[in-house]
Image (cartoon, rainbow over all chains, first blue to last red; front, side):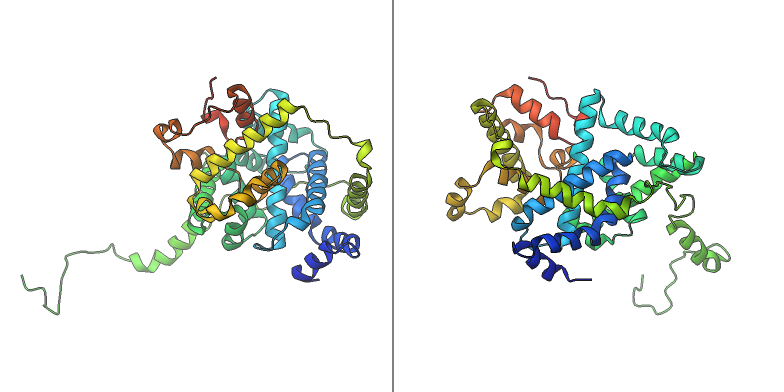
Length: 180
Length: 177
C-alpha cells in the first residue's frame, strides 16, 4: 500500500494524477462506501453520494493542506456529502430529519440489498432514533472500528466528548432493543 | 481526634464477597456488545465493488473534461449576493462559536480573506469544520449574544432559507421572519 504522503504528491502532479486517483479509489472505496451506506441506508443513494464524494476529492485535492490524514479529510467530505444529501432528500419529501430516518428504515423491509433478520432491523430502527452526532459516532466506533483519536481528528471533537456520545448512544440502543 | 493514628478505621464496610464478583460485574457493564447484534446485513449488488472504480473514474473524467461552454455557470446577481451574504453570516457564526478559528484570523490576514472566493470559503466550511449542530451553537450563545450580531445587511428570508437548508437538527430551532 502506498503511503498517503506519496499518494497525495502524485495526486497533485498532473502527470501522475489519474493513476494515483485510480489507486486512491481502489484503496478507500469500500471504507467510504460502508460509511455512507450506514448513513443514507439505500444502496442507490449511497452510490450517488459516493461518486459525488470522489468527484469532490478529485477536484479539491490541491486544497488538501495535509494538516490531517488523507483518510480523515476524505472521510469528512463523505460525511458532509451524506448529510447534505439527507437534508436535501428530507426537504424534497417535506419531512424533517427524524421522519426521513424512520421512512428509510421502514423501507428496509422491502430492500433487495438488506438481508437482516428482525433483530438487525430493530438495530437499524434504534440507530435511526439517535441524534445525528451520536449516530455518527456509534457507526464509526461500533461498525467501522475507528479509534476515538482518529475520530477526534475527523469530527473535530474531543476524545472525551466522543466517548460520552458513544456511551449515550449505546445506552439508548440497548434500551430500545431490550425495552428496559 | 488523632489524624496521625496508624490504624485508621473509617467505619466503612463492604458486602461479603464483593471483590470476588467485582471484576465480572465491571466487565459485564462495560461490554457494550451484550445486547447489540454485530451484523447489519446490508448487501451490495453482485460485482458492484469490482466495477465501482471504473464508474467513478468515468464520472470524474466526464465532469473534468466538460468544456466550460457546455456547463455555463449562469449567476443571477441577486442570488450571488445572497449566497455571499449567507456564507458570510455562517462564517460570522462560526467565528463567534469557535474562538480557536477567530484567533487564527489576524488583521494581517485581512487582505487574504478579502481575496477568498465564496466557493473556497464554502468548501472550507463544509470540509474543515465539522457540521455545526444546534447543540454546539446553543452551548456557546445565549439569546442576548445572538441579538448583538448584526444581520441587517442580509435579507432575512434568504438567510432563513439558507439556515433551514443547511442546519443539522434544525427542528429544535424555529426561525421566524
